[in-house]
Length: 116
Image (tube, rainbow, N blue to C red; front, side):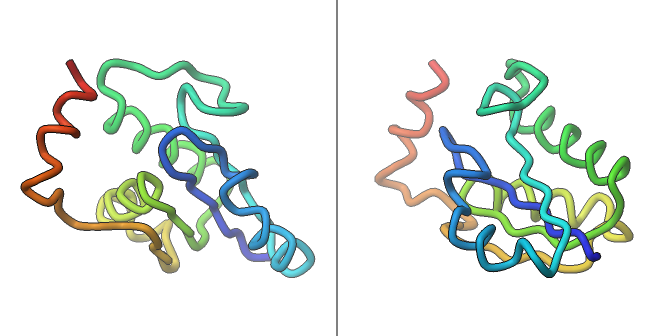
């Protein structure tokens, strides 16, 4: 079966954010539900260099489990883009939802405040 990697949004898990998709695809694909560092069932803690470490974590998982498609929600969508650019030979396609390529000017302060 072909792999589909599910990459959740911030403060979520793959299982909770993709319950409907899991139910739909579970009999036709190998579903790989990855929780990011510091989330859900992830075997690693979150780090100060969160985004970069999460990208590397997922790339390692894909290298270990085999190429596939990535479905990314919000934070997971951002990670999916970076993963596809770094290791295109391991990514068949990406499906993105809840993603924006930029932060609107009026929300930049809110985003920066999260990291204080």
